[in-house]
Image (cartoon, rainbow, N blue to C red; front, side, top):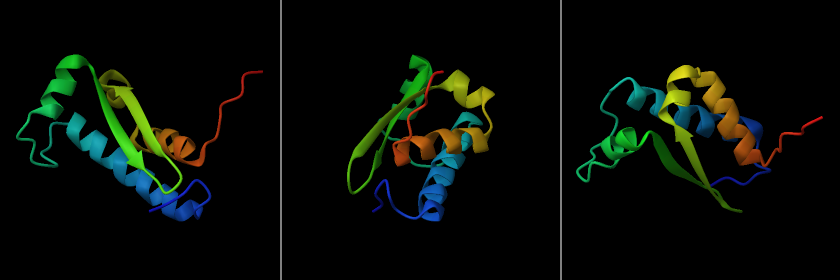
Length: 92
């Protein structure tokens, strides 16, 4: 398990793995057995919800499939990493 203050390399590896899985699903690859059909249901709904369990919190992230399609794997990983580290975007 990780926390928001875990080493960056560990958090980045987890974020990269999540992004890789999301892009594989988006391409139609079989990444896991889905007997309940939740992946197909999320595609029909237009977005996917997933959780990232950490020692200090559980993140629930919802991403539209259009965003996953239009964004690179690196971009998705950066977004997830920001969420894991608790970094807030500032508007100036």
